[in-house]
Length: 370
Image (cartoon, rainbow, N blue to C red; front, side, top):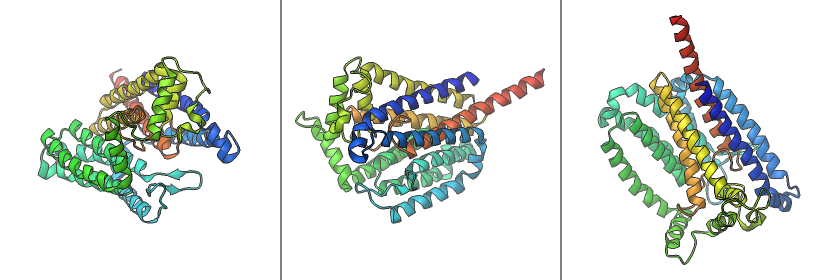
């Protein structure tokens, strides 16, 4: 699987380098006005990117079997952090999602996703055939899923909670759970989720604005309007690197969740298509690595990681193009931010470890045959 690891690393590094270029071009005007230094946010992003690479390398060395052994304890710890975040974290834009670490603001819900997937993969493996039985297997996984998702919803962070639920149930289906159990639970959860979305003011406004946009009389919000203008002005080939107009404060926080628009403006339809193709290729490589793992835990964890990355990428693209309501989901490895790029890099490190352990075991079997 060495070739798969090389392809995986090449894709991630390509996305990171592209992200650095886009963050600089998208943030320079804002940095100059806000901090009197066009490189301020760019330097911050580079620092986080270097940290993310170091963390990714670290996780590529740690045997992934440790996560199976200690995931329950770590998940409990993360749940405590989520609760403390709700109680003590200051609210920003009406949400209590971040812990200020000084260097950057850490978002515990991103860590909670990864740890939950580690724990679920272990639960599915331990339950075996019992995962098909609702009473003796399936229902126990729901406790972990809805505890984490519920705490994330209360922040409120509905989009991340949706990814947690959708990825978790996809993992349960891959792991052998019955479709009728998944469908029934998701149906109930969807009704409850819709009610919660309408309960919180900011999510209700986003959804109603999104629905009104179908009438043709308005856009979901100013960010979506300007994002679509940016994408449209890029045409097929783009207007060129550093030539973005939307980054001149027309598109709010263009370097963050809406950086896909800057990508389309500067590199055009070809650029956005290539990036989406890279995410799809990353998913395929990740699934192949997972499939080649010699144990179910590695297979399930590898799939969950790969699915989480591509789901986040395509949701982000869907929001920017106006196909989905506005969320706070970043474009993996590209958007400005600390927690997102660090957790995604750690996830890639785990995938690399799964692949490398497969390589070592294959080499040992070959040496025994010889």
